[in-house]
Image 1 (cartoon, rainbow, N blue to C red):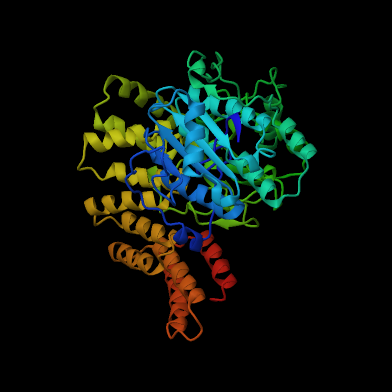
Image 2: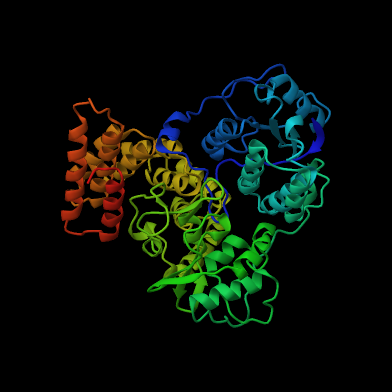
Length: 563
């Protein structure tokens, strides 16, 4: 075990181009996670087996489901045991080095995998972070790599007070290194080349995070005296954005960022090192501009490689701009090098029918719960106004809840969402609304279906007559592989609102999967198939037909031998 090594094990999702390590429905049922109270911390032995996050300092509670599932997948897929431990202080130890070594040795982290173990330790009071790396991993998880992760990934998020997202943001690098180690087809020269790509300077010694507190947070760009115009075309917006990301766009008086993009990225002209590393690829890649009205996609084709994922632009009253809200929500990185686009009631989806699409975020949203790029400035202005009101009236439930809702709708970072949601719950315990938006956020930001499920159970208990709640519950049961329960919830939604194409569509999917999983001798098999077809027919005959949803559903059913 090498001392002085830092690494940040991702919890579930890389938030940048919105990343998920996606399991199948069967995987999700197998990896079912139920929160349990932590056993008392002990150096002597691991308090609980089959647990990967020990959050004694209560720093990462909102990420627990995703952390558990992700770290378990790392163990199963790559034979690396990674644990995350947070503690309020150093306990009886003199240093974080001593503490981390004791935990690894006494808990036997990586023992079942021949020394392939990682411990990420966060000490809250000392604001120190350290990773102990098992001896079998040292050749791939190098000092240069860990130095990059700490200095260039964690620091910006720490400055924003968002350490959870800082941990999430290193998913891509961890996954890539774990895969390299697992496959075993590498040389020291290859690892050195990867380190150089990361622009890391090496020396991954432990860092005292308090040194960053004196630094200034990354500010958003100061607004000019007169607003510059947006781009005239999506292609111009794309080329200007690459030029600015390369540091060559100082003289370009074209604003290609929506207001919410600026709020999300700080100074959007200062991208992270990973983005800069991909610039040559994007500048030299062949692409098409796919456009449908006020929405357009920079499309590199249905090609593997995270750098080939599409970029989304929208036409605002000022011109064409980068749409980071939908970019994060719809473009999902699965196992490297694969990516996909999420289905749902969103723009852009119908421009990308040739690529792999998933239902992981296909929530029953409409109206005010859907972000529209054309209203970006209005929404951003409303958020700014509500933030000012919140500072003046932090106990005003209407202000707290509306700010939380808009932050959920626009996909802002967890530190802009979780505290507000929890505060709203305390200010009005009888209200169902905070639970609704907590559930939406857990799905859209983290794919945490079981956490969302608990929120929706509470919501439905307080609003039993709302078809939205039953639709959402049906969706969650579907994602968790509980197809019969999903059908029951969706039937209740139809009883509340017969004109419910969403419910019929997901019932068709449930029946189709029951049909596929049933044995040939199961007498229910033909019933499942006919029921799937019947639900498709009902979805086709409601007064307000969603042709795009139906087209995707027909294709999906046909691929499963239902039609």
